[in-house]
Amino acid sequence: MNTLTGSWCKFKGWEANCFNLFSNNQLYFGGDTFVGQAWDTNADDGNPISYEGLQAFSYFGSPGQVKRFTMMRPTFKVDGTVDSIKGNINTDYDLNPPVSDLAMQTITSDVWDTGVWDTAQWGGDLSLSEVWQGANGIGRAGAPSLTGSSNGTRLRWLATDVIFEPGGML
Image 1 (cartoon, helix red, strand yellow):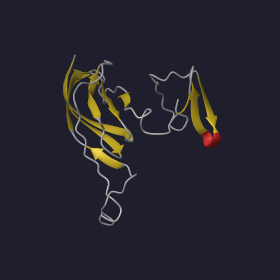
Image 2: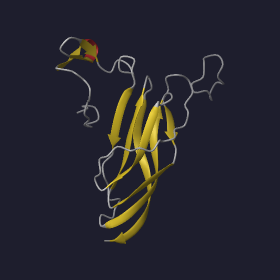
Image 3: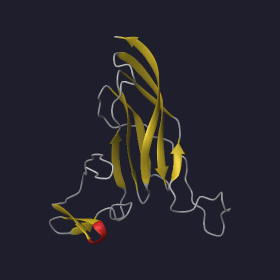
Image 4: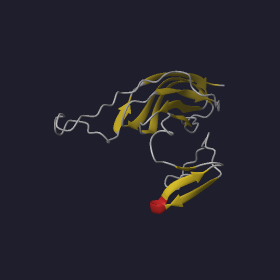
């Protein structure tokens, strides 16, 4: 559990036997033949970090009503280009990962002494990316789902807006 946000997650592929906070509260972990520092970079020893995310399922105020999900707009904060990201709306507690590619706004940083002051996006800042995407799914409950990978890019998934067409009560 993340003690700052209260959010739970699962780490996959970490061959860690133990974790410890060391100087300046830096997290380290140990395996059978190594010791590594966690949260040190936005890559995994130079390789992309893969991720999966599923927001909570919701009935969107009408639990007995079937809905046809048509669009979603994930809100991200990002500081570069994401290698690959897929997303969709999972319905009725289906946990399968999405297969549709998502579009993201391209985030570029200006170089010092070449960008226009008060309008340039300086390196290190996180920029907002909100792009409406087509989504599909029919069910009573829905949950936005993402999967992807990035190498050296900070990516934060903040929220998702969802559009659906209400159906009948079954």
